[in-house]
Length: 422
Image (cartoon, rainbow, N blue to C red; front, side, top):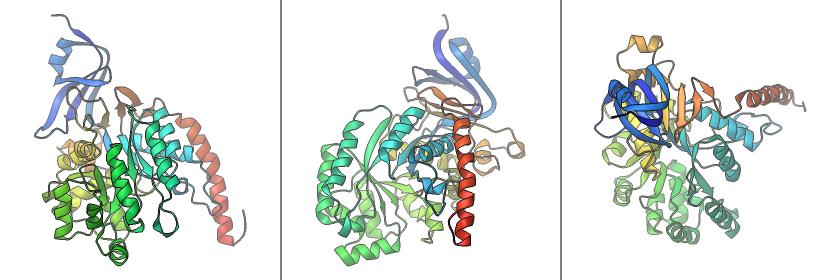
């Protein structure tokens, strides 16, 4: 039998499929054809069965699904916190954020901040997948204007059926939203089949305000309006009662953990043991603007493993950031290495001193000093990072822009400290 021609073969020392009940594979090859995974098999067998147009040999590397960042935000102020205002435009801030995500092995992200059209445009240009949060801003008094919902629906229609973008409504603190709007949103989200992303029970203040204004805790109120469903992804759930948890389980909502964001905000640790035992679909997100401070998910992954080692082994933590995160966003063809799934891949070198000092490449990846920098990244079989270099994103041009802006930011900060303009 003649060897079958395919687009790509990636030979890896280790391979994490992120499929349930799969262990870590060694010396296997992943076959990619027409953007999807064709087969995973031992490397000697792959060499005899396939004739790839391109073969990449990664002899000391771990190949795994691309990470799914379930809650991100691009804000120019996170990069240029100058008193006179951000020096980067929305497009440049998004491009820098996407560069950070790709370098950390993220191939899909959910955006819940401003400038959604700009974010969508840049994501498409750079070839990454996007779960686009449709912002529904609250007007004065907590009543969203009709124009806000209309704009969200227009954006949804613009990307309906797009292979690289899905849309979800992105809500602010729900205690600021009136009952009439929540009821309307529940109807619309079902009509257009768009899920909802929202911070829920993130702070004690949110719960107090909801009880004072509406007489109910946030989850109970969302349930009364028919918003809780498998298409609802709640960020945080830091403060839970038994009744809250029962509602989350009954409606099979997804939960986006933001452990470091909660800790930095002074809200304490999320109830990891409770949420893990409840069987809810978990994912990870930052819930804050990406920037120089903790830009990637690796800090949260490490946090899970170190704070709850009995619950989260390295393999379980990585499954939350891949397979389970994809399920939480209803992206069923992503998050695992399996035949027929999209070839969204990340490859990490495990050959430094940290790797040689340990025997488990997953522990090396999560806890080693060189974690979180991808050697290669693919989305739908298109390579966006090759041996650490961007293949599509014009990093030299963006870096030059950042270097040019940095002296301005430094001067502005110095002038502010002196009490005068730069």
